[in-house]
Length: 303
Image (tube, rainbow, N blue to C red; front, side, top):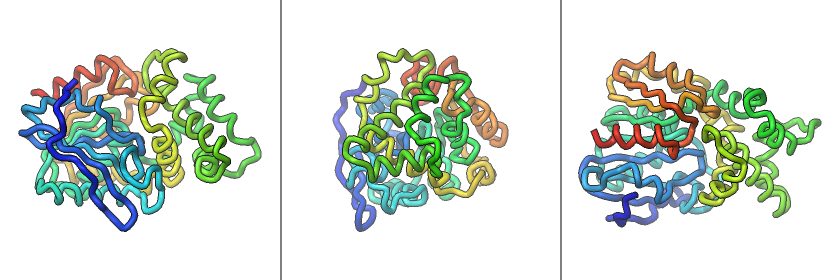
């Protein structure tokens, strides 16, 4: 892991309410690291992919995520707001054109940014493609995983009363925002538990809590439920319908063959509709910590 300290870091005011935290590490080819979730934030561990002698990398926590302030705030927090923030951040750092590396939700945000700002994107590296459409969201939250992960799905689902008129994500979000202090933490934890329990191929039950405690799971859970309850604030099929805009951008896709959260056909779908894309399908699940995916990311970044 790179231990290089950030050459620049701080907070950037992006509207009257939100300040986003960012760090710039290294010198050389400019990269923007776009974290997943939404709400996960970036971590020191994410720096391991880069060689800071060759890469100048901008890391940032999206609105409401991790170190950004206010923590876990869903106010003024939509996909378009996050796209605008990337533009504000790049402008603040005087970067006109950049390579973007996004994972999971970060692939959706990276793609939307590129579709709206193709002239600012040199290349895209996408790990674990999430298309932020109704089909993808329904796969994750609509019971499609009941056959593959029956115990995990039932644990997640049983926290919503059978007679509730709210969807699972809406009910969880309501409890996370408006429940008792005990309820808020319970629902944040259970949301994160469901996700982590299915995101690494062959994960053991006794490993899940340790992983959850390594990141700000409250902002992850609140932000994911907020975005998933609102179809990620995008017209359905927005990404798929606009791929022609980015067909001349070199795009590398890395996806786990056993990815339960984002099935591999989603990656194959966008790959088949892009002229300049390369697709690597690895023997792995969704997480970037799985050896095959981690090795491939580092190899692509250091080519």
